[in-house]
Length: 333
Image (cartoon, rainbow, N blue to C red):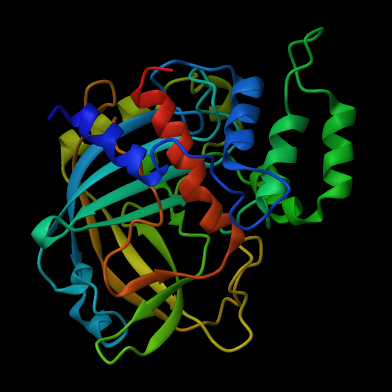
Protein backbone atom coordinates (compact mmCIF):
# COMPACT_ATOMS: atom_id res chain seq x y z
CA UNK A 1 0.00 0.00 0.00
CA UNK A 2 1.26 3.51 -0.81
CA UNK A 3 2.71 5.26 2.24
CA UNK A 4 0.11 8.00 2.02
CA UNK A 5 -2.77 5.53 1.91
CA UNK A 6 -1.27 3.53 4.76
CA UNK A 7 -1.01 6.65 6.90
CA UNK A 8 -4.56 7.67 6.01
CA UNK A 9 -5.85 4.26 7.01
CA UNK A 10 -4.09 4.53 10.35
CA UNK A 11 -5.66 7.93 10.95
CA UNK A 12 -9.10 6.53 10.07
CA UNK A 13 -8.68 3.89 12.77
CA UNK A 14 -7.61 6.48 15.32
CA UNK A 15 -10.65 8.55 14.41
CA UNK A 16 -13.01 5.65 14.95
CA UNK A 17 -13.81 5.53 11.21
CA UNK A 18 -14.90 9.12 11.11
CA UNK A 19 -16.76 9.26 14.42
CA UNK A 20 -16.95 12.63 16.16
CA UNK A 21 -14.07 13.18 18.53
CA UNK A 22 -14.76 14.11 22.13
CA UNK A 23 -13.01 17.02 23.80
CA UNK A 24 -10.52 14.84 25.62
CA UNK A 25 -9.67 16.76 28.76
CA UNK A 26 -11.42 20.07 28.28
CA UNK A 27 -15.08 19.94 27.26
CA UNK A 28 -15.03 23.59 26.21
CA UNK A 29 -13.45 22.76 22.83
CA UNK A 30 -13.16 19.76 20.52
CA UNK A 31 -10.27 18.69 18.34
CA UNK A 32 -12.31 19.62 15.27
CA UNK A 33 -12.94 23.12 16.61
CA UNK A 34 -9.23 23.69 17.26
CA UNK A 35 -8.26 22.55 13.76
CA UNK A 36 -10.99 24.75 12.25
CA UNK A 37 -9.70 27.71 14.26
CA UNK A 38 -6.21 27.12 12.85
CA UNK A 39 -7.67 27.05 9.34
CA UNK A 40 -9.61 30.27 9.90
CA UNK A 41 -6.52 32.02 11.26
CA UNK A 42 -3.88 30.75 8.82
CA UNK A 43 -5.97 29.52 5.90
CA UNK A 44 -6.55 25.91 4.84
CA UNK A 45 -3.77 24.56 2.65
CA UNK A 46 -4.86 21.29 1.01
CA UNK A 47 -2.53 18.37 1.64
CA UNK A 48 -0.60 20.26 4.32
CA UNK A 49 -0.43 20.26 8.11
CA UNK A 50 -2.66 22.74 9.94
CA UNK A 51 0.06 23.64 12.46
CA UNK A 52 3.85 23.60 12.14
CA UNK A 53 3.16 23.56 8.40
CA UNK A 54 6.61 24.82 7.38
CA UNK A 55 9.14 22.08 7.93
CA UNK A 56 12.20 20.11 6.91
CA UNK A 57 12.71 16.34 6.92
CA UNK A 58 15.75 14.55 8.28
CA UNK A 59 17.10 11.04 8.92
CA UNK A 60 19.36 9.61 11.56
CA UNK A 61 19.56 7.31 14.54
CA UNK A 62 19.33 7.28 18.31
CA UNK A 63 21.47 5.29 20.72
CA UNK A 64 19.96 5.15 24.18
CA UNK A 65 21.91 4.76 27.38
CA UNK A 66 21.50 1.34 29.04
CA UNK A 67 21.68 3.26 32.32
CA UNK A 68 18.10 4.37 31.67
CA UNK A 69 16.92 0.75 31.80
CA UNK A 70 16.67 1.12 35.59
CA UNK A 71 13.90 3.65 34.93
CA UNK A 72 12.31 2.44 31.66
CA UNK A 73 12.03 -0.94 29.98
CA UNK A 74 11.56 0.75 26.60
CA UNK A 75 13.62 -0.70 23.73
CA UNK A 76 14.67 2.90 23.16
CA UNK A 77 17.30 2.40 25.87
CA UNK A 78 18.75 -0.92 24.71
CA UNK A 79 22.06 0.68 23.78
CA UNK A 80 21.56 -0.38 20.15
CA UNK A 81 21.10 2.11 17.26
CA UNK A 82 17.44 2.92 16.52
CA UNK A 83 16.57 4.47 13.12
CA UNK A 84 14.91 7.89 13.36
CA UNK A 85 12.80 9.89 10.91
CA UNK A 86 12.82 13.51 12.06
CA UNK A 87 11.03 16.71 11.15
CA UNK A 88 12.06 20.24 12.10
CA UNK A 89 9.48 23.00 11.85
CA UNK A 90 8.25 26.54 12.45
CA UNK A 91 5.08 26.91 14.54
CA UNK A 92 1.82 28.06 12.99
CA UNK A 93 -0.22 27.31 9.89
CA UNK A 94 1.40 29.86 7.56
CA UNK A 95 3.58 28.07 4.98
CA UNK A 96 5.38 31.36 4.34
CA UNK A 97 6.11 32.19 7.98
CA UNK A 98 9.51 33.90 8.20
CA UNK A 99 12.26 31.95 9.94
CA UNK A 100 12.94 35.08 11.99
CA UNK A 101 9.47 34.96 13.60
CA UNK A 102 9.50 34.90 17.41
CA UNK A 103 7.48 31.71 17.54
CA UNK A 104 8.40 28.17 18.61
CA UNK A 105 10.57 25.84 16.53
CA UNK A 106 9.73 22.16 16.58
CA UNK A 107 11.56 18.85 16.53
CA UNK A 108 9.45 15.72 15.90
CA UNK A 109 11.01 12.26 16.06
CA UNK A 110 9.75 8.85 15.00
CA UNK A 111 11.92 6.13 16.54
CA UNK A 112 11.60 2.86 14.61
CA UNK A 113 12.04 0.15 17.21
CA UNK A 114 12.38 -3.61 16.64
CA UNK A 115 9.34 -5.65 15.56
CA UNK A 116 7.73 -2.65 13.86
CA UNK A 117 7.09 -0.75 17.08
CA UNK A 118 7.27 3.04 17.23
CA UNK A 119 8.02 5.78 19.71
CA UNK A 120 7.16 9.39 18.91
CA UNK A 121 8.51 12.53 20.54
CA UNK A 122 7.21 15.97 19.56
CA UNK A 123 9.07 18.89 21.10
CA UNK A 124 9.47 22.65 20.86
CA UNK A 125 12.34 24.98 21.69
CA UNK A 126 10.66 26.71 24.65
CA UNK A 127 11.02 25.21 28.16
CA UNK A 128 7.27 25.47 28.79
CA UNK A 129 4.11 25.48 26.70
CA UNK A 130 1.78 28.44 26.29
CA UNK A 131 -1.45 26.78 27.40
CA UNK A 132 -2.49 24.77 30.44
CA UNK A 133 -5.65 23.63 28.64
CA UNK A 134 -6.79 23.17 25.03
CA UNK A 135 -9.16 26.12 25.48
CA UNK A 136 -6.25 28.52 25.99
CA UNK A 137 -4.63 27.33 22.77
CA UNK A 138 -7.95 27.74 20.96
CA UNK A 139 -8.44 31.26 22.36
CA UNK A 140 -4.88 32.24 21.37
CA UNK A 141 -5.47 31.03 17.82
CA UNK A 142 -8.66 33.09 17.59
CA UNK A 143 -7.07 36.17 19.20
CA UNK A 144 -4.19 36.23 16.70
CA UNK A 145 -6.47 35.95 13.65
CA UNK A 146 -5.68 38.76 11.15
CA UNK A 147 -8.17 41.60 10.96
CA UNK A 148 -9.62 41.67 7.41
CA UNK A 149 -9.13 45.44 7.28
CA UNK A 150 -5.44 45.47 8.20
CA UNK A 151 -4.25 41.96 7.45
CA UNK A 152 -2.69 41.89 10.91
CA UNK A 153 -3.86 40.68 14.34
CA UNK A 154 -5.89 43.18 16.36
CA UNK A 155 -3.65 44.43 19.23
CA UNK A 156 -6.71 44.93 21.45
CA UNK A 157 -7.76 41.30 21.07
CA UNK A 158 -4.26 40.11 21.86
CA UNK A 159 -4.09 42.30 24.98
CA UNK A 160 -7.47 40.99 26.10
CA UNK A 161 -6.28 37.42 25.60
CA UNK A 162 -3.10 38.04 27.58
CA UNK A 163 -5.01 39.62 30.44
CA UNK A 164 -7.45 36.72 30.71
CA UNK A 165 -5.00 33.84 30.16
CA UNK A 166 -2.09 34.00 32.62
CA UNK A 167 -1.11 30.43 31.67
CA UNK A 168 0.23 31.82 28.39
CA UNK A 169 2.52 34.33 30.09
CA UNK A 170 5.71 32.30 30.68
CA UNK A 171 6.06 31.05 27.12
CA UNK A 172 5.15 34.45 25.67
CA UNK A 173 7.82 36.13 27.77
CA UNK A 174 10.41 33.53 26.77
CA UNK A 175 9.69 34.06 23.08
CA UNK A 176 9.76 37.83 23.46
CA UNK A 177 13.12 37.87 25.26
CA UNK A 178 14.90 35.17 23.22
CA UNK A 179 15.69 35.58 19.54
CA UNK A 180 15.03 32.56 17.30
CA UNK A 181 17.83 30.02 16.74
CA UNK A 182 20.38 30.63 14.00
CA UNK A 183 19.91 27.02 12.89
CA UNK A 184 17.77 24.03 13.80
CA UNK A 185 21.10 22.42 14.70
CA UNK A 186 21.81 25.11 17.30
CA UNK A 187 18.60 24.78 19.29
CA UNK A 188 17.58 22.77 22.34
CA UNK A 189 14.16 21.11 22.21
CA UNK A 190 11.92 20.34 25.19
CA UNK A 191 9.32 17.62 25.66
CA UNK A 192 7.31 20.22 27.72
CA UNK A 193 5.01 17.51 29.14
CA UNK A 194 5.62 15.14 32.05
CA UNK A 195 5.81 11.47 31.11
CA UNK A 196 6.08 8.20 33.00
CA UNK A 197 9.03 5.87 32.67
CA UNK A 198 8.09 2.31 33.65
CA UNK A 199 10.82 -0.15 34.63
CA UNK A 200 10.86 -3.95 34.27
CA UNK A 201 9.51 -4.29 37.81
CA UNK A 202 6.67 -1.83 36.91
CA UNK A 203 8.16 0.93 39.07
CA UNK A 204 7.04 4.28 37.68
CA UNK A 205 9.19 7.43 37.57
CA UNK A 206 7.96 10.83 36.46
CA UNK A 207 10.29 12.44 33.91
CA UNK A 208 10.70 15.36 31.58
CA UNK A 209 13.18 15.33 28.72
CA UNK A 210 15.04 17.70 26.47
CA UNK A 211 17.50 17.39 23.59
CA UNK A 212 20.60 19.58 23.90
CA UNK A 213 22.66 20.33 20.75
CA UNK A 214 26.28 19.23 20.82
CA UNK A 215 26.94 22.09 18.38
CA UNK A 216 25.88 24.46 21.16
CA UNK A 217 22.92 26.83 21.31
CA UNK A 218 23.13 29.89 19.11
CA UNK A 219 20.50 32.55 18.55
CA UNK A 220 20.26 35.23 15.92
CA UNK A 221 21.66 38.59 16.97
CA UNK A 222 19.50 41.68 16.57
CA UNK A 223 21.49 42.57 13.45
CA UNK A 224 21.06 39.07 12.01
CA UNK A 225 17.31 39.26 12.63
CA UNK A 226 17.22 42.04 10.02
CA UNK A 227 19.38 40.35 7.41
CA UNK A 228 18.80 36.60 7.80
CA UNK A 229 15.93 36.43 5.32
CA UNK A 230 12.68 34.46 5.61
CA UNK A 231 13.90 30.99 4.62
CA UNK A 232 17.34 30.28 6.06
CA UNK A 233 16.60 27.39 8.43
CA UNK A 234 16.17 24.59 5.89
CA UNK A 235 19.28 25.29 3.78
CA UNK A 236 21.32 25.84 6.94
CA UNK A 237 20.40 22.39 8.27
CA UNK A 238 21.02 20.72 4.91
CA UNK A 239 24.47 22.35 4.66
CA UNK A 240 25.30 21.37 8.23
CA UNK A 241 24.45 17.69 7.67
CA UNK A 242 26.54 17.70 4.50
CA UNK A 243 29.51 18.73 6.63
CA UNK A 244 29.01 15.84 9.05
CA UNK A 245 26.57 14.35 11.58
CA UNK A 246 24.60 16.67 13.87
CA UNK A 247 24.05 15.42 17.42
CA UNK A 248 21.88 16.17 20.42
CA UNK A 249 22.17 14.72 23.92
CA UNK A 250 18.88 13.48 25.33
CA UNK A 251 18.78 14.61 28.95
CA UNK A 252 16.08 13.31 31.29
CA UNK A 253 15.07 15.13 34.49
CA UNK A 254 13.86 12.88 37.32
CA UNK A 255 10.74 14.15 39.04
CA UNK A 256 10.21 14.50 42.76
CA UNK A 257 7.02 14.60 44.85
CA UNK A 258 5.15 17.85 44.26
CA UNK A 259 6.55 18.52 40.79
CA UNK A 260 3.84 19.57 38.30
CA UNK A 261 2.59 16.55 36.36
CA UNK A 262 -0.38 17.82 34.40
CA UNK A 263 0.49 21.44 33.57
CA UNK A 264 3.00 22.02 30.74
CA UNK A 265 3.17 25.77 31.49
CA UNK A 266 5.00 25.14 34.77
CA UNK A 267 8.73 24.36 34.75
CA UNK A 268 10.35 21.95 37.17
CA UNK A 269 13.01 23.24 39.57
CA UNK A 270 16.40 23.54 37.87
CA UNK A 271 18.12 21.40 40.52
CA UNK A 272 16.28 18.19 39.56
CA UNK A 273 18.56 15.21 38.93
CA UNK A 274 19.39 14.98 35.22
CA UNK A 275 20.67 11.92 33.39
CA UNK A 276 22.08 11.67 29.88
CA UNK A 277 19.69 9.17 28.34
CA UNK A 278 21.22 8.86 24.87
CA UNK A 279 22.44 10.62 21.74
CA UNK A 280 20.40 11.58 18.68
CA UNK A 281 22.40 11.77 15.44
CA UNK A 282 21.03 13.41 12.29
CA UNK A 283 22.95 12.36 9.18
CA UNK A 284 20.92 13.96 6.39
CA UNK A 285 18.28 16.66 5.91
CA UNK A 286 16.10 17.41 2.91
CA UNK A 287 13.01 19.42 1.81
CA UNK A 288 9.87 17.77 3.16
CA UNK A 289 7.96 17.51 -0.14
CA UNK A 290 7.94 13.83 -1.04
CA UNK A 291 10.38 12.96 1.74
CA UNK A 292 9.90 10.28 4.37
CA UNK A 293 8.67 12.57 7.15
CA UNK A 294 5.96 14.26 5.09
CA UNK A 295 3.10 11.76 5.61
CA UNK A 296 3.96 10.93 9.23
CA UNK A 297 1.47 12.00 11.89
CA UNK A 298 3.81 12.65 14.81
CA UNK A 299 1.21 11.78 17.43
CA UNK A 300 2.92 12.17 20.84
CA UNK A 301 0.80 9.39 22.32
CA UNK A 302 2.46 6.81 20.06
CA UNK A 303 4.67 5.25 22.76
CA UNK A 304 6.65 2.11 23.30
CA UNK A 305 6.21 -0.21 26.26
CA UNK A 306 8.02 1.42 29.18
CA UNK A 307 6.92 5.00 28.42
CA UNK A 308 3.43 6.30 29.24
CA UNK A 309 1.54 9.61 29.38
CA UNK A 310 0.36 11.51 32.41
CA UNK A 311 -3.11 13.07 32.64
CA UNK A 312 -1.88 16.38 31.22
CA UNK A 313 -4.99 17.66 29.35
CA UNK A 314 -2.92 19.31 26.61
CA UNK A 315 -0.90 16.15 25.96
CA UNK A 316 -4.05 14.02 25.80
CA UNK A 317 -5.75 16.53 23.49
CA UNK A 318 -2.87 16.63 21.02
CA UNK A 319 -3.52 13.10 19.77
CA UNK A 320 -7.10 13.64 18.50
CA UNK A 321 -6.31 17.11 17.14
CA UNK A 322 -3.27 15.74 15.25
CA UNK A 323 -5.53 12.98 13.89
CA UNK A 324 -8.09 15.47 12.57
CA UNK A 325 -5.34 17.50 10.89
CA UNK A 326 -3.66 14.40 9.45
CA UNK A 327 -6.94 13.03 8.16
CA UNK A 328 -7.56 16.25 6.25
CA UNK A 329 -4.11 16.62 4.75
CA UNK A 330 -3.75 12.96 3.77
CA UNK A 331 -7.06 13.20 1.87
CA UNK A 332 -5.84 16.43 0.22
CA UNK A 333 -8.31 18.67 2.06
